[in-house]
Length: 383
Image 1 (cartoon, rainbow, N blue to C red):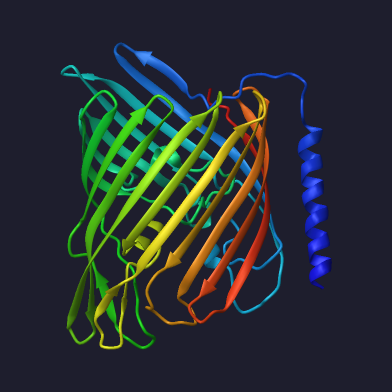
Image 2: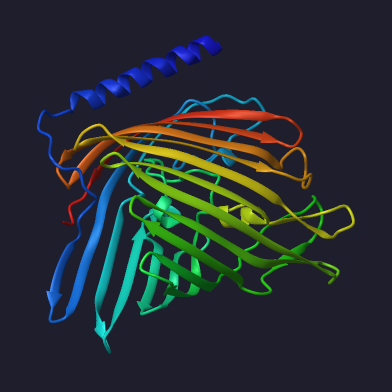
């Protein structure tokens, strides 16, 4: 049975490569990032951006999230199953206004996609920026938004902070090549509590975050972190508090003409809070204990020529202490992806395919794996 499944995967993977090869063109135009529509009125600039994206996804193994590949959704009970999904939820629209006010730049930016419930339009970014001040919802100060891996999968790797949330941030330049940022950000803790324990998680204080970034000729280095608090109030009224925090060290290096390599290392008691996971757990005495996490991400993007590119990334994460229910608490997660992308309309449209592998192991030792192939077609019509 396993041999038959392996053969089917090989055949489908070969077919995917053949499809991509069939659209290859001899004309080598310039591959570029999506270009938005921009127009001016006096000293103000208005920008419309966005794209239409179609995803065709096939899972060879069970996964409770058919739209994005998250190893946390892989079952560990040995169950089998396949699924095929076609959707356009990643389709995106954005609008920006920028201009000078009192000799300083003022920028307002809005962006959304259709990942809301029932394909509803969902807010991604909404912020205003004036000088050193930024207020609104956008990427957290903790993550390295310059190092988001270029996966076709919407989820992206599991081993690095990745969240958009409300924040108030001040960023100041220390030199021409370095900057320092401080922010207060939305606190959104989650805890692991034993079955039958009644109570609620409380947001006591906002998270405090900071980032130092140094840019150099071929890349950058970033050190960032956060400090926060998680509280659980039992149904009886008793409360338990624990301090959480985490650090991220991230770097990117441009190689050759356009190739780039990147590495991110993250650690912290409660760091899972910045990747959609728990920050703390209740112990047998009813006290909160931090969930200690270590994550690693390494990737490489290679340009075969002006229109063809590939990207590969691997990202494992580990739970370092014994907390939570052994039958359900994740102990080790792995995310890996490799893709091939071709821009068949210069600046305007691309087609790509990606193979994704995931592994999940819980504290009891049970584990499961997931394999997925994803094909995407993207039209960047707002140029």
